[in-house]
Image (cartoon, rainbow, N blue to C red; front, top):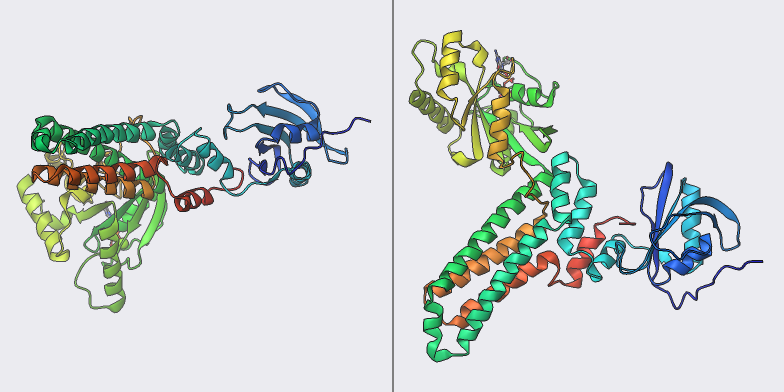
Length: 477
Ligand SMILES: Nc1nc2c(ncn2[C@@H]2O[C@H](COP(=O)(O)OP(=O)(O)OP(=O)(O)O)[C@@H](O)[C@H]2O)c(=O)[nH]1
Ligand SMILES: [Mg+2]
């Protein structure tokens, strides 16, 4: 009788196994083994296997040699695998019993169950991918929109990492120069006064702020952009929400003060994930419920990535005069300041001039032409959809996404934190330089900036951080 190889589990304590596909019933399910004993264990389950990247069609047997499934076995020889270790994939039938028998059989032959994110962790330790790339893998899997997936792929393929690495290289180069100057104290002043020291510092600063901007956009692409609809009662905020969501999400009535609660909808705007919030109309309310609604409206506006300030165009009394742009803008500002004393910064808002359908045709045409080339005031009708594509385009412009998103990558809060930290250290370094302070100070700040950047890709890491990152991944990833 043919006996299965029997690896000593003590020699291979660290070969891990998990289902790589989601649990449940499916045509095919993939179980993955990784570690020094992966091949021996796989041979125990499926017989002789030696050729890497070859699809073997085999029966899968338990340690007691009972056949329980048949399928494909693929062997990836170290270091040419996802984890960098020997990896074997079993493509068996996707039934819960079959999969659990397969995993149990691998354990019987000496593997152990993988912890969450352990395959990724090994890929990181074996330098197959850096942290940003592995997070890109997780983001790609979690992507809820086409654009989010595109940006995650950017991180996975190294767009983000390359940008960060280039920045680290530039910081290191500058550091070496500054540190060399410290070794020649008599000439230090001249060293630091070389114009290229400031030039390089400025260039690094520009590069960093560019990456930070892209990272912020990348993070918002993953989590979604938040938009708040604000304005006076009856301006048509709820109608705008309903047109965006394509359904009657919020109650619309002709009674001012209809909306009190914040009503949130998730949607895709040309493939970009958006969270849009309808809020209570802003006015001096006497009713306690409405007051609370207005308080919430302000809070929503303050934390949103973008506010759409909805204005009822008929409330501007344009019908009797020939509309004039400066006049309209003045009226809008006046309306805003009466209801929203802590005025919104112009860069976080778009003015939605609603109810255009109610204007007489000639006035309508005039208003449209007045704001044709304007990026901040957008005439629309929530009722008829008039001008809606301008609004969509305006939002995309405001949140900084373009259809050419090739250069995008996904990012997480921890990346933004690290980049911001690096930016602060760099600013401090520049300050010391401009103040003519000793080179040691600048060198130290550059070092701190470098370390902050190193945390992104994992060049500098604590076990704590790694545990947190990989712990958030799922088992089998
Ligand atoms: N003709 C026309 N009427 C509109 C338009 N948008 C909203 N309305 C009407 O204006 C009234 C108020 O609309 P809502 O969407 O409830 O306004 P709101 O800003 O949410 O009001 P509050 O919740 O009270 O703050 C309703 O009668 C709507 O049908 C529009 O574009 N054209
Ligand atoms: Mg409303």
